[in-house]
Image 1 (cartoon, rainbow, N blue to C red):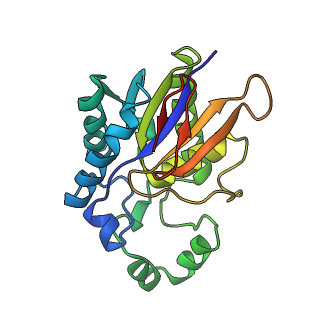
Image 2: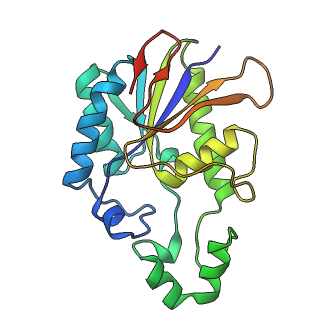
Length: 215
């Protein structure tokens, strides 16, 4: 059997606060983001994670370290948990994207994949994140919880892929806030192979296999 996966999004950065498309630009948490991670870590520590695996981008790694300090579980990294590569649009606001690429931006806002930007497809993103999650889960026994610290688009696409859909065409879940989390569990041989038990959590109570409850 495999462990439960908890996806935890990193805390806020200046790009988040400014409405900039972050992608794989490696910028740190800002003061708000550090405070968010510090506030969330005590609640998440109650699940007693068996592993903490982070994207190798600094905003995710630093978020993960707040939980590591509370639990004593060392952070490992997996580059497959990185944010989506947005190509030429990384670091830009929506207004800047629209001004420079009006047609491509319209395609993107409608859920399409515009040509000429160099952005990673949602399908490829979902596949790499889902693969990382499945491999992490398989390394631990049922009842354990593996915390994966990643990014907004990466988590959303990974969840969609784990739930058996194509992130390029299926948009049935919302995004996830800074330092919020989502939980999926192995589905005991049923289809799809995973089921979501919490999404974009950060205020309610969540049950875990070993009986811990977190906010």
